[in-house]
Image 1 (cartoon, protein in one colour):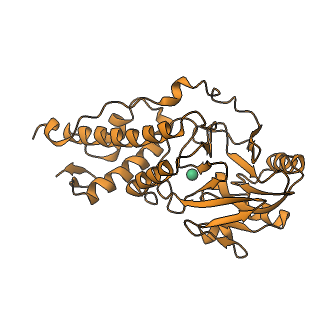
Image 2 (spheres, rainbow, N blue to C red):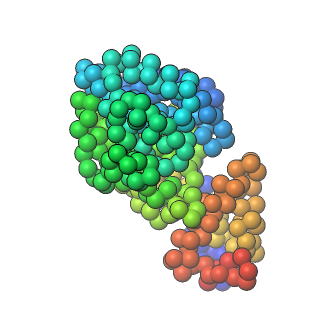
Length: 298
Ligand SMILES: [Zn+2]
């Protein structure tokens, strides 16, 4: 069957952020007050995957004397100093540590800093929250630090991923949406179908801004970014189907075709996203196991 008959044509989606004048990679300020409720502290762990580094958010009503720390990030002394300085500048003590997901670049400092602050750790996974911690329920509303924080389930990047919606309408999205580029659906833990549902769930909130786990805050048109993420996933799936149609059969062959324009250092992550998309296509009955490690179109 010709490709056109099996795969709807999908254009390369345009990234709406290209025209927004966002800070260049590596130039995110180490400290930024994003709105009265939120200060962002940049962790010193830049890399191709963490972009400028992990964004740690200090959130609270400025008059409350309290704040929550969201995604403390790496357990790094200089980063702890910077977060404590941000708390002091707000005249706030930390009353809870919230974590979007279990990856170390977000969660490593959660338990040690929680102990230091005398504050519980709250997350979707028991391993992150620790023995004295709090397991967060999808959809619950936390009343903390003079404000409210809605717990938004956003599985996909990982199974335990949460986003946090603030009273201002801004959403802390962790690794669900990045300030630059697109996110990885990990494999085998991640789930492309869940990821797409989570993108639509955040879209339906009509976020006033997206405060990402890495990279700049997205304030100009958050819905356009979420639309782009959905279109990007559809485009990658289309490319994968086209590559299979043209004879690529193993994950390595598919990555070499579909991610040809992506630096090779990122191909291990591209392979995870590819395996995750193949799992979705297998579940839909559109691909089947081939000989050995190969897959084929059905
Ligand atoms: Zn992550």
